[in-house]
Amino acid sequence: MKYPKKTKEMDWGKMGNIYVLSDPDTKEKQQIDSISFLVWIQCDGKTSVEDIVDVFAVDGNRDIVKAAINGIMEKLEKKKLIEWI
Image (cartoon, rainbow, N blue to C red; front, side):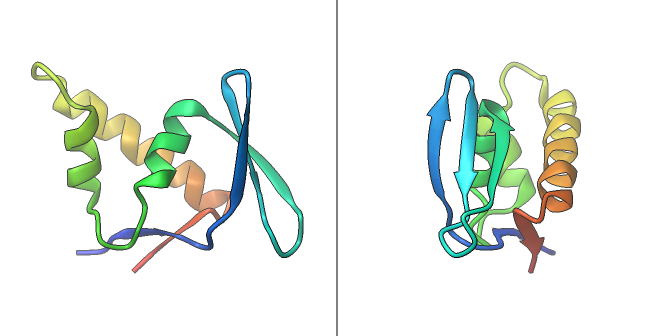
C-alpha cells in the first residue's frame, strides 16, 4: 500500500477561505482550498488514504468522501505538493 506524503514542509497562511502554501526555499506560492489543505496536512507518509477518509466520513457517506479525497489527492499530486511512498 502506498501512502501520501508532502513533498516538503511548507510555510502557509490563510486568506479568506484559501490557504497559501509557500516553499521556504524557492518562495514559490500555491493556493489550495480549505478541504484540500486539511487533507494535505495529514499527508505524512504514514497515514493511509483510508484513514484520511475516516476523518471526514460520517453517516454512511464514505463512498462519496472517498471519491472526493481521491480527487483532492490527484490535484495535490499534480501541483507537486504530495508524492506516494
